[in-house]
Length: 315
Image (cartoon, rainbow, N blue to C red; front, side):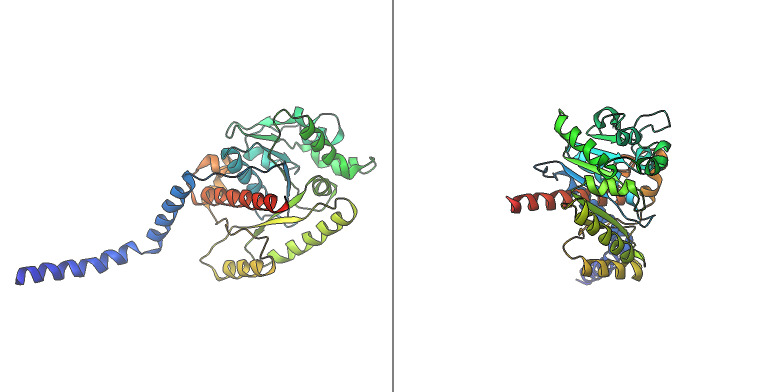
């Protein structure tokens, strides 16, 4: 009887210790990642009824704009959507991340804007993601804003190229993402005129709302004078560190100001996300099970589902 009591007491003492070990922050995080991986295995993303043309823009630099463009595109492509990325930033970072050659001799977005090449002829297929194509940005694009100034209908160049491509494509794209430069010049205006909606990545930092407020005003001006259909449809919080008060405060503030526009999913700060471009890969292709890749895959599915709900309510 005493031995049984002693053994029972030993087990009772061990269980609280085991529970404490299993509930550490690292263990909780690992369990959460494992749960999310399992949940994503059987997930699908509804396809839009017509091509979605999305300008990814924020006039503030360093907010994860290009990273968001290529990883949302890659996630949707891996889920079965036909996706096109138009690299409109002269730095060509989206082209690099997708492993697309973009030296000065390559025809790409620059030639498309000038009418020297069609959009279909400049698209290059991603080797990482077979359902994903990219119009590369070369250094020539740096001078495009000045060169287009005297041109007729200079704000309509990209829209005309996209409309012609969609009309003639044998495989109609489900999504066209336009990676904009971090400024409101003629290139970004072309993107806002060509797109039906804007996706805004916001870094979880102090000046986040200032940048999106400026962009909101500019999108309103474009809607008033050039493209009545354009609107900000999606805001995605990036580089979120939930351990800091600042990240939590910024997230709460953004959600308060834009409750219907902000995705529930947030993109955490992630070493893998930062490393991927140096290997000319998206984080989806670099480490598909990392926290950053999981977050972008979840964001892509959430965005696709929101689009499907809007389509259904509009019909």
